[in-house]
Length: 84
Image (cartoon, rainbow, N blue to C red; front, side, top):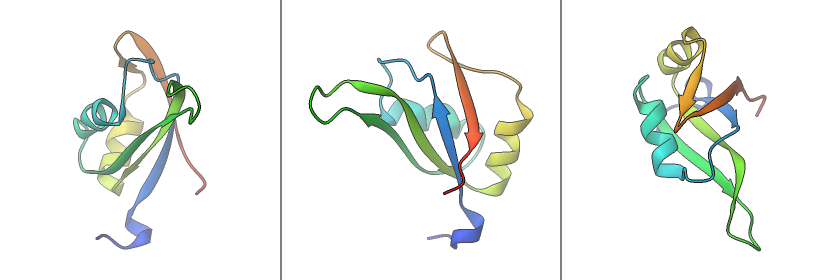
Protein backbone atom coordinates (compact mmCIF):
# COMPACT_ATOMS: atom_id res chain seq x y z
CA UNK A 1 0.00 0.00 0.00
CA UNK A 2 1.20 3.49 -0.78
CA UNK A 3 2.07 5.88 2.01
CA UNK A 4 -0.62 8.38 2.99
CA UNK A 5 1.27 11.32 1.45
CA UNK A 6 1.18 9.72 -1.99
CA UNK A 7 -2.60 9.15 -1.97
CA UNK A 8 -4.90 12.00 -2.97
CA UNK A 9 -8.65 11.90 -2.40
CA UNK A 10 -11.01 13.40 -4.97
CA UNK A 11 -14.58 14.40 -4.21
CA UNK A 12 -16.82 13.81 -7.23
CA UNK A 13 -20.33 15.31 -7.51
CA UNK A 14 -23.14 14.93 -10.05
CA UNK A 15 -22.52 11.22 -10.63
CA UNK A 16 -25.33 9.67 -12.73
CA UNK A 17 -27.65 7.38 -10.77
CA UNK A 18 -26.74 4.54 -13.16
CA UNK A 19 -23.05 4.66 -12.17
CA UNK A 20 -21.67 2.48 -9.38
CA UNK A 21 -18.23 2.28 -7.83
CA UNK A 22 -16.87 0.00 -10.56
CA UNK A 23 -17.89 2.41 -13.35
CA UNK A 24 -16.49 5.39 -11.44
CA UNK A 25 -13.19 3.55 -10.96
CA UNK A 26 -13.14 2.65 -14.65
CA UNK A 27 -13.57 6.27 -15.70
CA UNK A 28 -10.79 7.61 -13.48
CA UNK A 29 -8.50 4.68 -14.36
CA UNK A 30 -8.18 6.29 -17.80
CA UNK A 31 -6.06 8.97 -16.08
CA UNK A 32 -3.76 6.59 -14.20
CA UNK A 33 -3.67 4.57 -11.00
CA UNK A 34 -6.81 4.45 -8.87
CA UNK A 35 -6.48 3.00 -5.38
CA UNK A 36 -10.16 3.14 -4.49
CA UNK A 37 -13.45 4.50 -5.87
CA UNK A 38 -16.72 4.63 -3.96
CA UNK A 39 -20.11 5.97 -4.94
CA UNK A 40 -22.20 6.84 -1.87
CA UNK A 41 -25.58 5.12 -1.66
CA UNK A 42 -28.53 5.84 0.64
CA UNK A 43 -28.66 3.08 3.26
CA UNK A 44 -32.48 3.08 3.35
CA UNK A 45 -33.39 3.28 -0.33
CA UNK A 46 -30.26 1.82 -1.93
CA UNK A 47 -30.25 4.70 -4.42
CA UNK A 48 -27.14 6.64 -5.37
CA UNK A 49 -26.63 9.94 -3.56
CA UNK A 50 -24.96 11.34 -6.70
CA UNK A 51 -21.51 11.77 -5.23
CA UNK A 52 -18.47 9.73 -4.31
CA UNK A 53 -14.77 9.62 -3.60
CA UNK A 54 -11.80 8.44 -5.63
CA UNK A 55 -8.30 7.86 -4.21
CA UNK A 56 -5.45 8.32 -6.71
CA UNK A 57 -1.70 8.91 -6.86
CA UNK A 58 -0.10 12.28 -7.67
CA UNK A 59 0.37 11.56 -11.38
CA UNK A 60 -3.27 10.57 -11.78
CA UNK A 61 -4.37 13.65 -9.82
CA UNK A 62 -2.39 15.88 -12.19
CA UNK A 63 -3.88 14.12 -15.23
CA UNK A 64 -7.41 14.53 -13.86
CA UNK A 65 -6.81 18.21 -13.08
CA UNK A 66 -5.40 18.86 -16.57
CA UNK A 67 -8.74 17.94 -18.17
CA UNK A 68 -11.19 20.82 -18.09
CA UNK A 69 -14.42 18.86 -18.24
CA UNK A 70 -15.29 15.36 -17.08
CA UNK A 71 -18.37 13.73 -18.61
CA UNK A 72 -19.67 10.32 -17.59
CA UNK A 73 -22.82 8.91 -19.24
CA UNK A 74 -23.77 12.39 -20.40
CA UNK A 75 -23.40 14.04 -16.97
CA UNK A 76 -20.83 16.73 -16.23
CA UNK A 77 -18.90 15.58 -13.19
CA UNK A 78 -17.64 18.11 -10.67
CA UNK A 79 -14.26 16.98 -9.37
CA UNK A 80 -12.29 18.62 -6.58
CA UNK A 81 -9.53 17.54 -4.27
CA UNK A 82 -10.91 16.55 -0.88
CA UNK A 83 -9.40 17.90 2.33
CA UNK A 84 -9.55 14.45 3.93
